[in-house]
Image 1 (tube, helix red, strand yellow):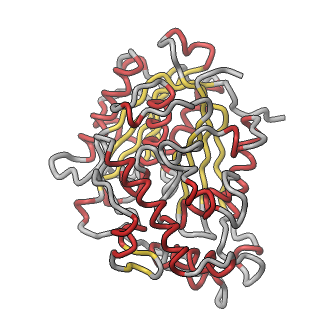
Image 2 (tube, one colour):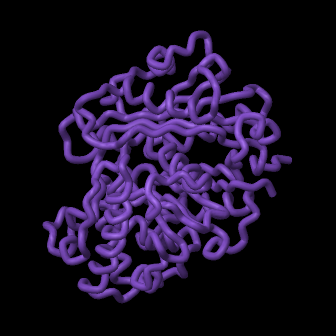
Length: 406
């Protein structure tokens, strides 16, 4: 019977480029920069890596459909290198594959790396490909197009169900975005590094009512990487490795309760709840509100972060507003969220985002934040969360990590 990944593997090195409009560099250059930092951080050489997993989600990155294009940029001859693609969970999936390879004994030192180069495309959001049409007359049909429109449906549904008038709901979302922009303003690797006030966010133009300009994350260029070894070997490389407690991916296959005109009311994302439930069980977490010290979650839109807080058990269902207004998730609150700046401020190059979150957790665990104001004090257990595609047709990744075994 499967017994999970808890404490079987550890991260010994991480790397992350600056995210942003990187007109000065190619996708290959971003890969190399993240890779060089990760192997230097781990104290190893390229020849020490015996298996590699790379992620790019969008064809616009122009690295090709196979692992060879990534391997060529990194000059890793004869190393098995697989390319992965799984929507916005792509980066998280690469660390999952690397971890399973090491835990199984198939690899001793595995590389997980992701990159995306999207600003060159010239679109304000993600390039949109073909979409499978769901049954007619369903809520999924209303939010088929993805992007701001689909998540705006979640916001209006949430406001209606839990009795938030427009002003209260809009201020809740604005506080979430303001928190992320403040965190990003302190992060030298973030794409957007300007703090924005709640009032400025509320006054900004609407993109898809009730979501305004500052409720929506943009796209970025960037790369990130991690080096994974077995937990028993980790301290041969460094004194402070970070141990993986759980890795869970959950995808919908068109379950009736979400695809039909049935009970799903667009105020939660069932895949979030399922992935979190499995991750907590694997990690031995019974009270995430108290046991998870901090997290990096997929705030593609401010309403997404609000719903994630409830789906992951950080806030009681229907009461995230209370925690947002009380500052629970602020950088100096009891359970900080997106201390990096999140997708909203740090940026969102699809293939790199999940690994960038891993980078942030490792940096915080090891006390290496660039500025004192960015360094958290309570870092016993951390979580990353990614959401791919528009709900309810979503793929979710949840990873839990910590600096101690057990």
